[in-house]
Amino acid sequence: MKKYLSLLFTGLIVLSMYVTPGTTVKAAETNVVIAATGDCSCHDVTPILGAERNKMVSDLLKSEVFKNKKMELKEKGYTWNGAHGIEVIRINSNGMILIGVPFTKDQQTVMAAFSNGIFLGPENM
Image 1 (tube, rainbow, N blue to C red):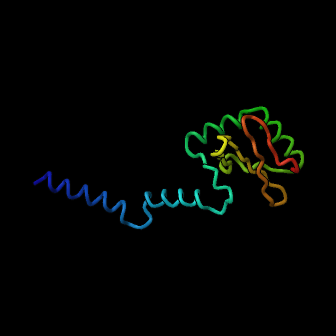
Image 2: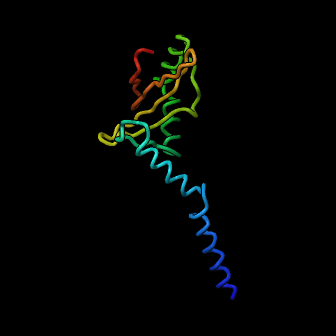
Image 3: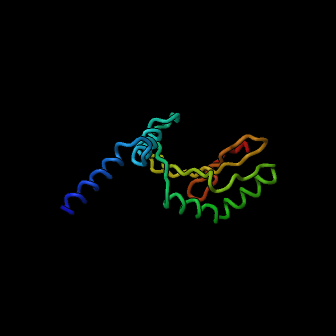
């Protein structure tokens, strides 16, 4: 009898994970759909998240290229928004990984793009 009761409650818990609104499973599915069909006209990109993203961001923040560009932009009046706003994407067609670092000046945010330790732009910063 204990086994049947345990099986019944386990099934109820698993079922409730998929049926109840606002579950993490549905949230993950929603994020995938947004990433695939979002406002971006570039459907050929995949966001990199989690530990892989954190490792890439950490490597960038330690690099001399980033430190030099950050100091240069600070001299021009830009402020760095912190590591939480950094976006990492992979371009699926060629496998290139881009890291976008947000900088703000006069309440306007501009993304500085880096790839493989090289500053890509925007040059008008």
